[in-house]
Image 1 (cartoon, rainbow, N blue to C red):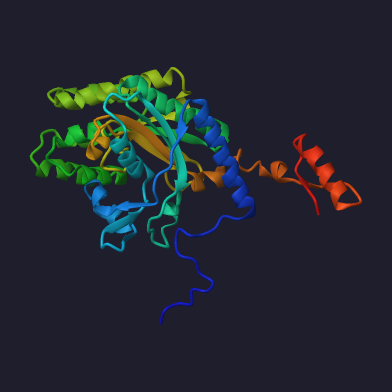
Image 2 (cartoon, helix red, strand yellow):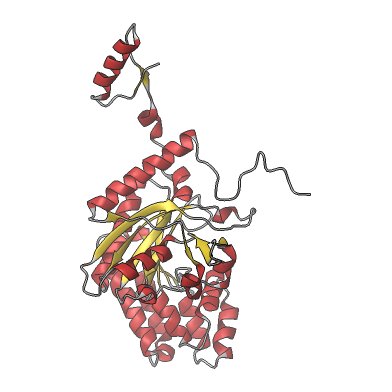
Amino acid sequence: MKPDNTLRTPQASEGVYLAEACRHRRLLRMLEDHFTSWGYQPVLTPVFDYFETYRALLDTAQVERSYRFTDREGELLMLRSDITLFLARQMGMALPADTEPQRLYYADSIIRHQEEEDISSDEFFQAGAELIGLSGREADLEVLLLLYSLLTPMALPAWRMHIGSKRLLDALGEGRTDASAIGKLASLRDKDALVDSFTQVRLTAAEERARLLLFIGTLHELTELTEQLAPALNPLGEVNAALKETSALIQNLSAIVPPERIRIDLSEHGGQPYYTGFTVSVYVEGASAAVVSGGRYDQLLKHFGSHLPAAGFSLLTRKIEPLSGYASQFTEEARTSPACGESFSARYKNAVERRQHGEKVTLI
């Protein structure tokens, strides 16, 4: 027997009310103002698109989480479950190869299935930024510093950026391993399974590859580890190139960002198959999973007809809102006072005058 849906709502259609809505709107206004001050412009993406357009970019789990339906012509459509993908299609089709760099931001809902017991994934709103048309270390630094300067005024409890490299993960597998499977094992920190995976495809130095992929620490500690592993890793040119790229990025970033906010985490791979360079995740005390993910994805727009490089990040705002001291300061902002006056007309005039001075005034 089907349950009575009178008092139930479909997943991802839940409302946001009263104090929670105030926190949500306050944080969004701050995000929009911040992105704009950095020269980023707003963009909107469609709510649904053709499923087959994205099929090659989705792994099995992502396909299973997506909502799909057929239109009146029988075409299979997919509801927006990842704004980055939908934005990449828009920009890939619209931007010419010689376009000026594009700085874009978005804030919108996403719709995807999550198991009811998986509260860590209960997220249906994304906000983020994309830098399209620029590559190299300074472009990566711009994205990371935009993120850092955005998180700082949010007044979050202890938080840290974990920076990894999808390029390194791909290099360690040398095209013989399933990068998605290796990434999942790295996330689980399953060293034995990683060693087995590298060994099964006849890669040398399987133990050293696994140790490197599981590294979390400072730049100094990474330097010490790479020196220890040098005899095994020196012949691996692409691995060393990826390590040098990551080390240089962290060194430049550390000149601006306090070291306690940064961790090199080579097990971080972005969680999406389209990443190609640096990756970043942000972990906050009190959150069960990362509240931000991002990185470089230079091949993503190519799938939609453009060869422009891109990097960016997305924030899971509903995870951030209850933890943000800034977002919780809605009480004073939301406080209202009644207008003064014997008649409605007098109260209206009084309210107009007081609102011009920034007060929030009700008429009745």
